[in-house]
Image (cartoon, rainbow, N blue to C red; front, top):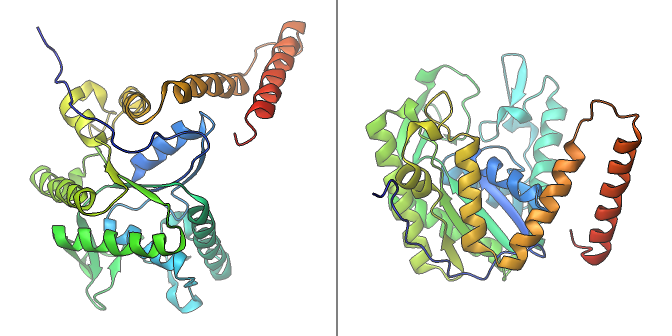
Length: 313
């Protein structure tokens, strides 16, 4: 008796390896994937300008970063005693205006620097809904807990998503022609939109990314959404909120990512680096013992040997 669906999927891109640099942007699921890659020695930059859910917000950030369009002071507003920007996460909100401004522009510069060197741009799309300020018609990425009646909710058309990502990728490739695009759809449910509305949103994202993959060379899709919602497909794979995939689920998705998108040699190196990552995190009960000092020395020797062998790690 079968207890799981088999997902038929084959990777058509070049295998991802440790010599690649990856820039990841998008929803909170991006952070899980970025952390897993970090723990295995990849060169990554994950969500440098904050968590973003709707694809047009991601594209605005990339256009700002590559258009050298610094955010100006008059774009910030004061709310709840903090200076914020409608397009940036509250991680960039501070009580001092110049501190917020510096944090935002530094993040945009880091994004540009990373993408100029990156082999891969990984975009995880979270929602096809976006919010627009009623007074100005300006799309926002974060409402910063401003009154809800000041915003209008919109469901993006598939063509809007496709056009935004294609034009953004064309801009990036004008500066970095070898940049490859990996698209995923976040399996996190946006229940605040409603169950039916969430499904409409995810359907538009899925259709949009497949159109992009069909139309744009060196663009690929990884089925993170299907792995969680169709293969795992049970609430035991979710956190207590029944919305976010739990540690076991995100680990499973990353394991599938390794199996499908990396060579056996890369996966072997992943395991070796991950064991060193776990060793660095170890917190001994008796740090003064000879055994623990030997453990530290052995770990340091393994790290040094690996760095000499593979200096790009």
